[in-house]
Amino acid sequence: MPPAESAERLIESITACRLCAGRFAATATVHQPRPVVWFRPGARLLIVGQAPGARVHASGRPFTDPSGDRLRDWMGVDEPTFYDRDRIAIVPMAFCFPGYDTKGADLPPPPLCAQTWRARVLDALGQVECTLLVGGAAIRWHLGEKRLTQAVMGWKSQAPRVFPLPHPSWRNTAWLKRNPWFAGEVVPALRARVKEVLNDPI
Ligand code: SF4
Image (tube, rainbow, N blue to C red; front, side):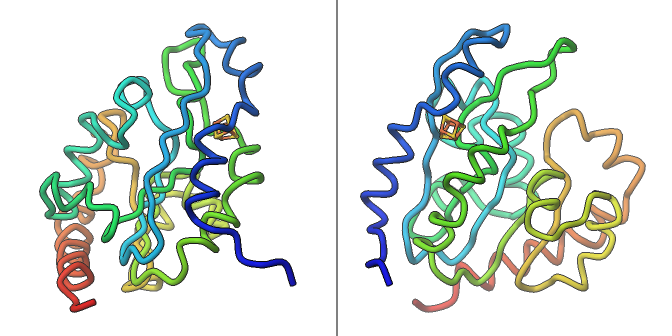
C-alpha cells in the first residue's frame, strides 16, 4: 500500500494546479486558474461548495461574498469561526472560478477537478463530524441525487452527519421564498448541529 500523502504536499499540489488553464482561457473572462484551497486535517465540519465565484477568485478566500454572508447566517457562525481551518474545512467541487456562461451565470465546476483531487482531499481530511452539501453539484456528487429540492426536503434522512442545502446565492432567493420550510425547519436544525459540532471538546 502506498504511504498516505501528506496534507501539506497535497495542498501545495492543488495550489499549483493548472489543468484547466486552456478551458479558462477560452471563457469570456480569459482568466488563469487560481485554486482556493482551504482545509486542514482535523477539521470537524466540512463545507462542500460549488466553485469560487469572481469575488472569491479575486480575494483568494472562500465565500467572501453575499453567498458567504447568507451561509454564515444559516450556520449561525461569525467570520472568525467560519474561517478557522482547524475547525471548518471548505472544499468545493472545483477549486477555481470556472468563468461565466453567455447569460452571465457562473459556469458549472469542471468535473476534472473532482476527478483529480476530491478523493485525495477527503482522504487527507479524515473523518469529519458533519458535512454541509451546498448546492446541486455537491448534492449530486455526494448523495447521487439530482433533484435539489427533494434532497433538501429529505434532510432528516441525512442528518445529523450530512445537511443537503440549496446554494446561498442571490439566484436562489426565489427558491427560498417558495420553500419557507427551509428557513423554518432546516436552518434552526443546522444551527443547532453546527453549534454542537464546533463546541465539542477536541
Ligand atoms: S479547477 Fe481544479 S483541476 Fe482545474 S485548474 Fe483549478 S484546481 Fe486544477
